[in-house]
Image (cartoon, rainbow, N blue to C red; front, side, top):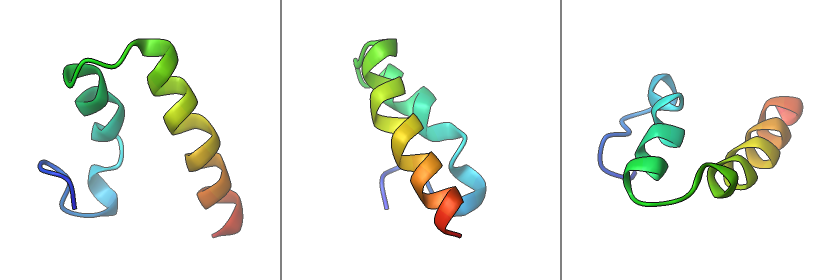
Length: 43
């Protein structure tokens, strides 16, 4: 697991950690939205 992510309860932290790592907001949206949507729809 990435540093700062211990389990599913920490998923909301992912976007913040990506921004802190230097990604632009548009990049974070592209990484998070389709992937989270896919996972949540499948589960």
